Length: 346
Image (cartoon, rainbow, N blue to C red):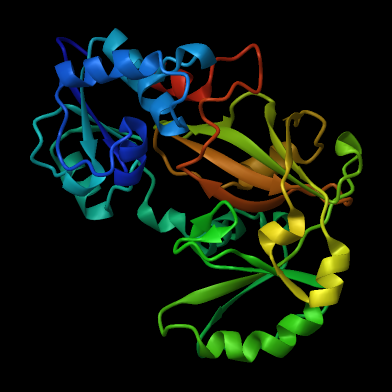
């Protein structure tokens, strides 16, 4: 791109507040101020991960979006999601760390703006993610799960002995309003399901998903090992894992407590994880699993969570565009994903 393009990084309000150590941000930061913030935050060893993504972190060997885009000749602005609008005089917009409404995306596209990090807002729903994976022929890579609304018949299918109850939106084991996911014995959930559905607001749903147990030989035969794999999608439609290494969250579940109480918050049941790097190159069905994953034609980075039970079939849990792993280097031969993403040509 010729000249010095104006590039705006749009960031969810709470993430920008965390990155700047400020309670509330309600204004646009121009290029000079953005560069000053980058200089200050880059050398701070105590900043949270949103600051690493934007400003980098010297001690973690992360350059961050601001420095990477500036090195390509862009004049970089920062804008909180709540005040972003189509009227801003910029050429390129990065919404990797924000939600861009579909109508605003269309308006910006009609004005020939270049947009990075866009994923349709509907993909924040686990029900939409599961439906998209099914549509691509990947149903066998899903746990057995049911989506229930207030007026649905409260009947679980037979088979699974344990279920996890969650909402369509949320992450890190909690719904979007902060309520923890919960794990149930099949008997207790079937008994309680009518009252759970009756208490749902008219437009809301819950997901009852089979709780997948593992016996992972690469993690001491732990019984619940979640793989968090970084993925990169491009505007040309290509998508795939970033390298062959990922983060593994290794849990040993409290089965005795679950049997005694019949229902537990997810965190209480699985406990604090041991976090280690994992290698996915040994997973035989990985190429087929990747082909079934739902991506759109956009330059965007995602964290894909999956788990591998003893049958060897990966089970897809969810994808997150806002994740806490993009500044980590799982593969020592590759830079952090946030830096690779930002260094792609403008």
